[in-house]
Length: 441
Image (cartoon, rainbow, N blue to C red; front, top):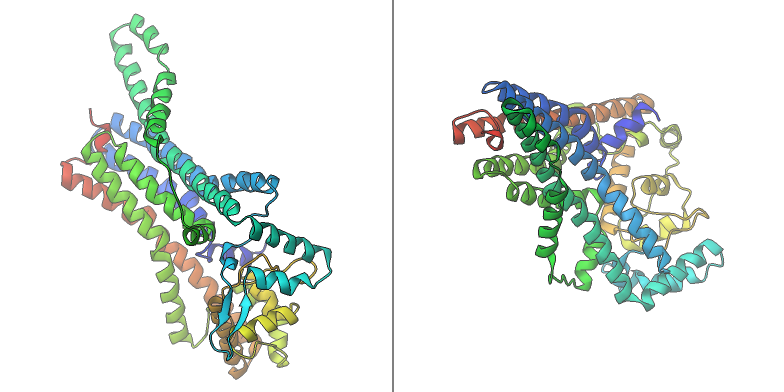
């Protein structure tokens, strides 16, 4: 993997890669150091407890938060496949979409439309995809139920572990260590009693309480809601689980002051993780366009593609005639080997089967594909108007990579530096002490 591939991955705010870089490599170690530094102002013993709790909390939570949803979905997808359904069928296809710009109106995408259109293709891979559509069409309610369970499992399981189970176990460990230290000072006999202490009854109580709270709670979803949640990206589900994590951390706090601290920290973290980077990226790209007169809205992997640069130089770039659904679908279906179609697939806007036919099970967002086409076309025109297309492309790639790294740097600084310090200032303001409220004796 080249440096450009890495920068491209961490620059995609729709994926989990920027979160992985910020959370594991920058945010976690910085938060641990700041927690220790602030708590040392009060007591070395409390600082040791805070360091241990923060280390367990940050890395265990990150592992569950980043890997829990994909792992759970992988297992559930296997279960759905064993039931005879393909989990890749997009529920948005149940709505037959019409082109509003055409008169008379024409259907361009939908379950029945795709079955009829792609059913004429005799390629086995295409026929298998059509069979998946027919299976879902004939068992809509069953398939919706399976996807609902998938969503619940992928979001609830990691959230419960991160927000309710992990904090309780972490607090119990601190309690046990403190009890051991206290009893070691009193007598050797009491130490033997400490060794018999276990987490078994504590674990049973946690899961028993949670189980009791969930009894008799039936969640019903409508078809439109199922379609919405089924199409959430992993990063969207992580945002939802982060909200649940906030509720869990506040509700499991050892006292109200710790609850206030957790609410302040978690809400700030959600904003800085899922909202701020998007606006920073847009702002940096607009600033670059204004200062350097270069469109840097395309992915750096596209900007360094030699075939793309040569096609621009030779004026051989093929694009859809317009952003209408008819023209877009006609182009991506008849010219799957075009640079536009290849880059659209690379950007996740279109999906093709290995045989080169568009995957009829996947939904194509016409508005997003149209915007991608506009950015594609805008860069081509800017490059053609430059004196040297190759130098223009290199400049655009350099600026785009710089913007991505700057975005990661700024958002990481806010998450790993500003937020933790602000949290302890909030603690000092509300409690009069720098130490973690839950660790005070």
